[in-house]
Length: 177
Image (cartoon, rainbow, N blue to C red; front, side, top):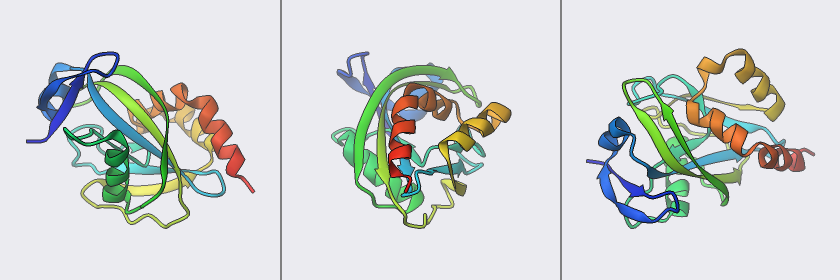
């Protein structure tokens, strides 16, 4: 059984619990999310595989996961990006925040989410068990798409975009040649 790390609001570890149980009960746990940009400043999105335990078929950030016990958030982010998208990139932690949201399949996301940024011009090699499709998109076009079709995007990705808006915009604009 896959475990998640339960934490308090200051990220003090409180123990571990099964991933599904944590999401059914809405217990606060540690998570990581990865945003990948190409050298043109476009953001890599993945469309989650339909068979995911929640939010299947929705567009989201390049990768996300829950660190395993005794695993750093940095290692978890790098490992998951490689597993989901076949990309090995240098990542830097940019921010973190806590959110609580209701999902499909009677799941509740209550996460302390650490956000990592990376740059890669490699062509993704998605893991078909995790990812149905992918695309690169400019930040401004992404915002327009989300305004028009918010139901096509994961809850946490929309929250990430709001929480890290200034940093994402600045980071992507600095890459544009």
